[in-house]
Amino acid sequence: MSKPDKIKARAPRGFADRGPTDLAATERMLAKIRETYELYGFEAVETSFVEYTDALGKFLPDQDRPNEGVFSFQDDDEQWLSLRYDLTAPLARYVAEHFDALPKPYRSYRAGWVFRNEKPGPGRFRQFMQFDADTVGAPSVSADAEICMMAADTLDNLGLSGQYVIKVNNRKVLDGVLEAIGLGGDAHAGQRLVVLRAIDKLDRLGPEGVRLLLGPGRKDESGDFTKGAGLQPDAIERVLAFTEAKGQTGAETIDNLRKVVAGSARGEEGANELAEIAALVAASGYENRVSIDPSVVRGLEYYTGPVYEADLTFQVQDEDGRPVRFGSVGGGGRYDGLVGRFRPEPVPATGFSIGVSRLLSALQMVKSPIVSGQEKPGPVVVLVMDKDQIAAYQRMVAALRKAGIRAELYLGSSGMKAQMKYADKRQSPCVIIQGSNERERGEVEIKDLIEGAKAAEAIASNAEWKAARPAQFSVTEDKLVDAVRDVLARHFG
Image (cartoon, rainbow, N blue to C red; front, side, top):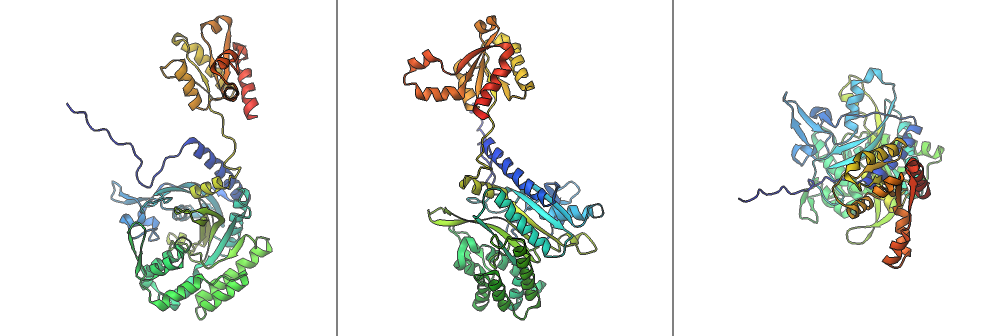
C-alpha cells in the first residue's frame, strides 16, 4: 500500500516566522519606544484583532484586491468581520464606544499585528506589526507638531540621531491641487485615491514611475499592470509640481506651496497650518529634525490635514546593488472624520504609526545597541547520566530555578555526546553532570561551555584537550547554585 503524501511544511506567502533573537531584539526596541511615548503622557490600550467590517469603513488599503485589501469572513449571525488592516480604525471605534469614560484629549499608544490582503513581495508582508500613538480630541495643529517631535525623540532614543528626518505635509494642500485639476467633490473620490497612492510611491518609483501611475498605468518588474489615474498631461505636471515644491527652507517650501494652490481656500488653509507647525517645531528646537516636505502624502484616504513620515536618510543597497536611501519607517497624520463616523459630534484626532519590522531592520543595519545588546544566556542543562536517577536530576533543576536561574533537565533519550550537542544548540552557559561516582561523593561536575570553547581554540591537539579537561570542575551538591551563579557572573556580569 502506498503511503499517504506528507503535507509540505511551508509558511503562507506574505507571512513569516520569527526566532528568539529577533523576538528579543524587537522587545528591546518596543520597550524604548514605549518609554518615549509614556514620557509624552500617552497610556497603553489594546484593541481586538478582528473588527466588524463596516466599522473599518471605506478607508481600505487596497480596493483592487479581493475583500478590498482586508481579510474578511462571515460570522454565524451573518455579520461580516475583518482582520484589522491598521491600528487607527480600531482605535476610532474604541474611543467612540467608550467616549464618555475617556479623558479628552485622549492620548494612547498600542502595539499589535495588522493584516493586509495585498500581493506579497520582497519586504512586503501580509502580516506585520505596528506601534501607534494617537491624540484624540485635540483640534489644534499643535497636537500634530507634538506628534512629530515625539517621533523625532523616539528615533533619537533608538540610536538614530542625525540619520533621519520627520517630513511633514498637509492633505488640505493636496486637496487644493486636486480641486485645481478638476478632481474635487465626491464624484471623483476613487480617482483622487489613485492619485494619492501614486504620489505615495514617489520615493520608491521616482517621478517617472509616478507619472505613469498618474496617467495610463504602470507595469512592474514581474509584469503585473497597475491601472493609473488617467489624468491629462497638464494635470499630471501640476501634481508633480506640487511634489517638487520643496525649497531650501521651510518658509520657502510653504511659499512655493501657496503658489501651487493659489485660489483654493482649502489649499491655502493647509499651507497656513504647515506654517504654524513649522513655527511650533522651531520654538522647541526641532527644526533640524522636522521638515516641511510636499512629497509626503500617505496612501490611506482617511487623512484630513497634516501628514508626516519618519524617513531614514542613510544609504543601503537595493536588489541590484545600487545605493538608495533606507526610506520610511513610520508615518501618520490627522484623521478628523474617522471617530466622528460613530458619534453625533465631530471628534478631531491625529496619530503616528511605526512599522516595527522595518524599523528593527534599520536598527540592525546601523548596529544600534538597542537591538544588538547582549542576549540572555541559554538554560543550564542538567544531563541525564543514569535514567533511574531522574528524580535526583529534577531536584537539581528545581533548585536552580528556585534561585532564578534558567535551567532544564535533558528530556531526550540519547547518550552523553548527543546531550552535549543539544546543550551547545541551546547556547547553554554550562551543563551539570552527575554519574554514579560523583553521586557517591555527594558532588556534581560543572562544565563551563563558554570557557571550554575558548580553551578548545587555544589547545592544539585532541590529546591535550582530553588531558586538560578545561573549564570543568567539581563542587558538592549543596554548592551547586552558588557555583552556577559564579559561572554566569563570569560571562554575563
